[in-house]
Length: 188
Image (cartoon, rainbow, N blue to C red):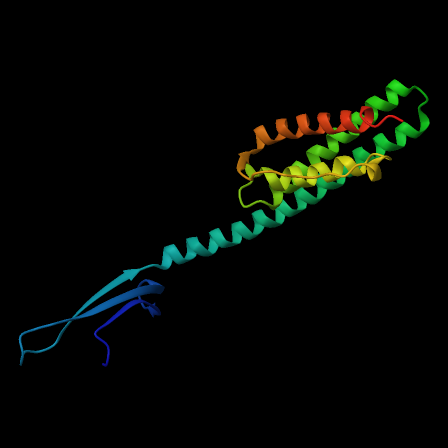
């Protein structure tokens, strides 16, 4: 009685003929000439199906999130297993060229793992921040070298969002550059 309007008021009701329904009510008091009877404009919308669809969508999103987390976990474990196998294989080899090839492959897998992790934690799964990606990638690459304590890394990067396909190529180039620097620039 004290209000002149209300919006989006939900009411559930069991109807004898159509069953339980969820109704959305909106109302406005219509101003009349003084002394005349008050008029109320009431709009009623049956939102039962919309509410059921919203509930179903919510359940599907929870299920999708659970599946995505499981796939992410399995993918990271698989990549870690690949890295461990490559590393283990280098300990039994004697050919320096073969060892170097395996270490390069290990470094590339590590680069892909950093990209994958950044994409997983970004808001959009097909793009991410180049600064965040390169910052992590540089650290991951440098730490793999025994002479990493001799090198001081300074990172000065502008940030922008980049798509995953381009970012993967950038990661490979940065990986190659840093790997070559760490292998060849500090000999002796």
